Image 1: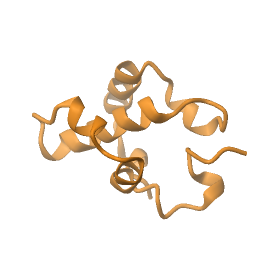
Image 2: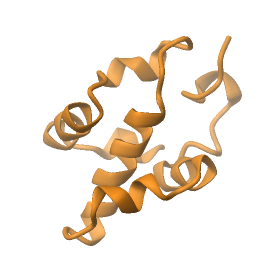
Image 3: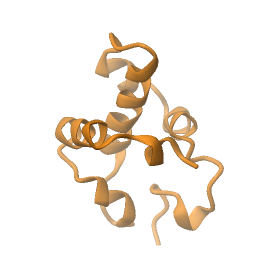
Image 4: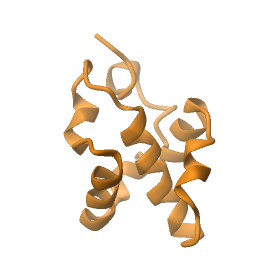
Length: 84
């Protein structure tokens, strides 16, 4: 299970507002996702340290964000960064 599956509605809304991208963009292979993945990583990071700054998530690599969100172990067709 990915960390995205454990997010509350409020955390998802925060990530959407911060990124300017709807969570449904994860399902669209052609939609830009980096801002959304960064914002999702940030809200997950804030669970363990509420003072985490957004810039800390921005400084992570894509691989680090994917690990943080629990998305590296999923099948490629479920990976939100894979284009069809």
